[in-house]
Length: 320
Image (tube, rainbow, N blue to C red; front, side, top):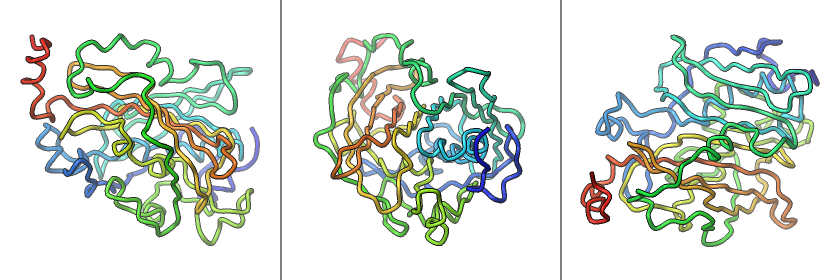
C-alpha cells in the first residue's frame, strides 16, 4: 500500500469495493458521419435498446480512488486499466466498482463493476508499470480472435493500417472537444462520479506534479474519434465501445499540454451482431515525442444499423 488517497479526500477508504454511484449521460448530442450516435435515446430505441447508454470509460473514474489507495501516485503515472464492457448502463442506474487486490508478487489485479442488482457492467484488469505481454484483458481477447473472413462494413480496412497523419490535440478546461464529445472538461468535472482537486483549476497546483491532470476517463475524450483519419468502415452506421485499455507510460496527462497522436489498426473481428475495429492510439508529448500513454479501443459497429448490410453481404457472397 503506497500513499494515501489525498486525490480523493471525500472517498471512504480503505476499501476494495467502491460506493454505488449514478453516472451521468453526457453524449446524448454526440454526432458523427452526419447522424446521432447510440447514446441518443431515439437512435438507441431504433436498435432495440431502452435508452441511450452511458459511455463505457465513464466507469473508469469509479476505480481511481480504489487504485490510488493501492498504488498511490503511480496509478496516475504508470497505471493501466483494461476492460471488456459487458452490459450497458443508462442514466439513473447505479454502479459499484470492485478491485481484487493483487496477490503477493502478482503483476496484474482483477477488476469488475456491477449494477445495484448484480448485473455485470465490465470485467478487466489493472497493473502498474511493465507487465508481461498479453497479461491484460483486452490483449487476451485479441489473442483469441478468429480471422475475420466475413467483413462487410469494415472490408476496406487492413490490420497494420495507420492513421492518415499524426494529430496534435490539447484539452483545456473550457475547450470544446467537437461533435464527437459535445462537452468540455469543465462540464465533466461538474458531473464526474469521483471528483478530485487534482483535476481542477484551483487544486491542480497542489497535485504532486504541480499542474492539473486529465482524469483517466477523459483520456478517451482527448483522443477523440479516429473516423476522420482513414480508420473508418463504411456508413452510415452506428457503433459503440466494446472494450478499452488505457495505459499510462510517462503520465499523468496534463490539462493544456499539447500531445501528438498516432493510430494503427491492430485487429479486425466480427460477431453475429457486430464488426469490430481494434485501434491502438499512441500519445506522445509534443516537441519531445516522448511516449506518455496509449489506448487500445474495440470499436464495434452494429450490423443492423448499416442500411446496405444485407445487400452488400449478398453481393460479396457472404449472405446465408
